[in-house]
Image (cartoon, rainbow, N blue to C red):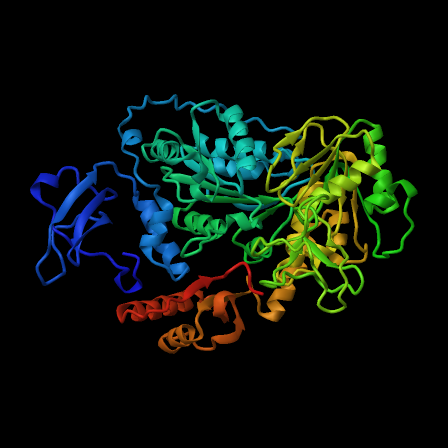
Length: 630
């Protein structure tokens, strides 16, 4: 049941007709409060502690065991950690039943797994052969891996999974999006051979997703990879959990109780006695905390290898009036960036341009007084979708053909923020005759050929170039660095490093920022561990996650106050806020020490149970350790 005060197991009698098929982990239907509802059979026992009359299980939906004991334990732990309900976690863990896929007969696969061969181009560069050896022996090795530029990380993940399978255990690997999943899927097919793993993603569709899920639950495949939908995959005898780029916000589940794939996988590794691998070009504060507490070991390449593999990275400085090449004036490129792009294109290599904003002109202002242009109907920001379009509101969609500035009466508009499509248009004028491609929300490119072209992409949508990019230009960096977010600097470095890693070793990376900034210094030196250590130390001093634990409470002022009055918060809990939230609501933060995380989650869940029991009309959204704190 999704109600907090009913978040516990209930006892039912199993009729003789269902005795044989009603095993723990099967789906059933039972009567609850006069209604026929779905349920999970968790355990079969001889006697019940309930003194009243018990009802019977009404129906066995399917004899298929889809909720394994290991996943059931994990789901309960995740619900407790995030102050949520077990029913909500099980909804995320087990996909909806698809009867036709369930009834399809499946032939067994060949269990033989080829040996993993290491060479200097693989894990040997990092001195991490001991990590694979530990996985091959079935030991719970746990590591945080900082990848070098140009690294074939899907192949490294596939080798780690194969080493685990060699020990007779299973592996689960999670990536952020479909493009990364396709690359990892291909790498596993190469290392393990066909039919020895499945890819699990919510985008597969009901039948394909359930088929892949059953392949794992029936023990047909030892390895499951996927997006965050795969973090609960029922792999038998789990020996390794792996996560690529744990700082990507796509790893955060947007549905209650809002778990993060990193925390789910680390909890799973702890409960199952499995190994763990967090990999990425950039390191998060959470990953750094795992190292400083001794829970995991560091995998990082020697500085000599990093220098040999890292492209030349140079800042442009922060002077807005710096000298520009005449041919680059229309493209708002500093001369060093224009020269880098021109040199790469002359050599027949593609050029990547990262622009933080999508669209054409996503933000506009009065050309006379610089007042931001707002919709006269709803006060939403005005934007321009193309060079021939009429300014329109991004909130209500109304056009503003006759816009007049409310401050000075001016009717001319200028660009306040330039988007990816406008940047592509400008670069087309700066480099005539060169193909210009864009990759963003409307169309995300997976890869581009190894030929002269300019690729304009938003962060996270950068395609992979076959031979690497000859130049990578990071523009409009202020848009990332000045965001009102606790993780703005960390997220900026992650996006920069993910783009810079696509450059050739002999290529160039130009970042339009001041070289004295610590974020830029970390990029130039390719030293994310140093930056993560500094970031974690600052958060520890300020009392921010992950050095402390926080819970976000969002709802009407009356509902939030009621929840806080009901909750028995841990001693020393600190209340921060309230601050305004959307739709007339407010947001309150509760901060406690790391050791009090379980007590905070329990207190909030019990308070939510009290409110649902008395049928409180106004709900409160409870998020433990939310990504957005500001």
